[in-house]
Image 1 (cartoon, rainbow, N blue to C red):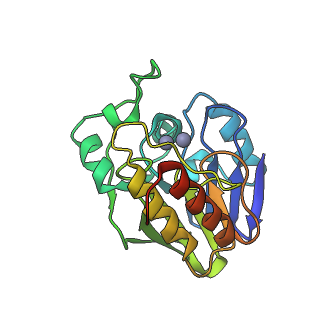
Image 2: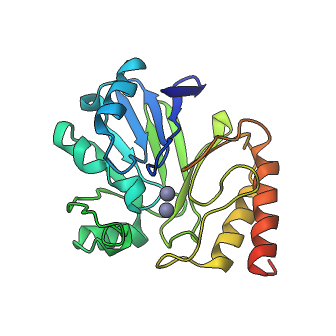
Image 3: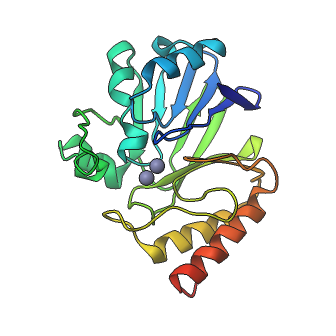
Length: 229
Ligand SMILES: [Zn+2]
Ligand SMILES: [Zn+2]
């Protein structure tokens, strides 16, 4: 079931290997933030219907990075709709060249079909979903193309697998992961203005004082990786 976080912003918290899935309902434009593995497509479809949204009406998919638990569901959605898929350049260029290695599909014995990433993102890219404005923050560390999506006016950041609740943070032992970079990225989140709510790629949302939660993730990561930033 999608939980409503703020007007027109919802999140489906996963109870499986799937990522959480966000929904930004901008009226004629509607975006999903990550898509899960795709193994639970009919559950996603049913959950969307309960908040009055059909798969066909999805106009944009904003990926926080290209791991299979976030990108896997894109294939089902593009069978029924024609959304523009957004992903940071560091991973989009590979996927557009047909190189799916960074999805880790092989590692998990699955397959991610080729797809076209039209929304190739960089630090500072801006996306509008209806009248909801989203700033793209490049936050590498979990993977080279990891991004966070910041909705300043609502104080909400979709943090992907960079920052989790309870002072936790993403692992860095997959290809292109980097401990120093994730510490830098968490530090940056801890210094953001207008950041009350964190909607991570896994586990529970942080609904109050997300900046403080980011600060504890940053401090934990700094100590854990023994990186002096
Ligand atoms: Zn993940
Ligand atoms: Zn990941």
